[in-house]
Length: 417
Ligand code: AMP
Ligand code: GLY
Image 1 (cartoon, rainbow, N blue to C red):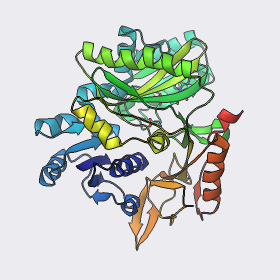
Image 2: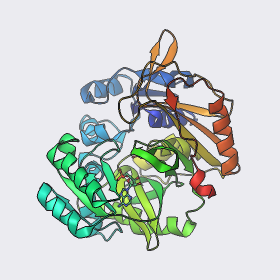
Image 3: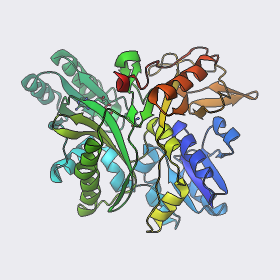
């Protein structure tokens, strides 16, 4: 098979590499990819993810069997609708179904309608009304930009003043533009966070192993929210009963609810959950694989990724198996991220033998890979225990010259407390 992956980050590097490792696959193209993918045999194609017509033309010319979409932006731009209209096979939600991620209010309404557990909330476009609600509710409280904001449109406010300031930034100063023209204000949920992803084809739901992301920039969950600074899988402090409950009360009702309301979902459904004393509750849905969760989750997949997707696209039952290892993935970011960051630093092209590198914000200059984005790459390693996996990754990172870059030293530490 010849496949096309849309996207250019570490997540797409992991997806493309895993697809290519499947014996039924001959070639994997990635548009627009990044130069760090090339040494893994992935064919990088210089078409941006926003240029649907050129991507369609490429898929036709190369006789691509099917296309896999990594990021949320093309999904919300209707890339699945456009490919299907052109008679091409593509795996991902159409524009209407991608709204489960594209609008927090859409997701909240779905959850209310199908009794999916989540935090109590209200949405606002009016700053005065939002502020009055905050005064009435008190802190801690969570303020979220309604639309996409690259993981940065959420403020977990410890005090009423912080919450009011967040509302002013979003509704009055338009810090997130149109994405923040409406805000969702919700109750703070107490508990451990985990990410539960599933392969979904309408009513068929096949859950993956869980992972835990580290959204804050610095050790000890300090600093601003980011796209994600590292992840590990499994998450031993989350009991299997909590996962089973999340499948029953969140994933399955979400998939069947989407069918019921006329927006059936096919693709990767991602539930961001908090394990509260009352059971799992949703903090967000995404319509795609998570980054960096994918790099640790797919690294544990022992069956063929292409065979899974191909089975789902053709109405067959997929075979999905995982190893029993622990996987730890540590993001190396450019100094300054998630604000203005350094660029152009030379970055390593090799790690210890059993540590994988997944590249994200990189460019090529005179045969070298150089930093060209906030999250530059992720190092992933596995072990029979979490400690062993951590040791492997951190020892590999310690040997790398990482000029003007930083990484968290505590990925996975919460599981060992
Ligand atoms: P999100 O972009 O919705 O995943 O939110 C970013 C981060 O804010 C999450 O990973 C959580 O750590 C935190 N968060 C979001 N919603 C809540 C909530 N209702 N209660 C507590 N923490 C939350
Ligand atoms: N790691 C969180 C996300 O991909 O949204």
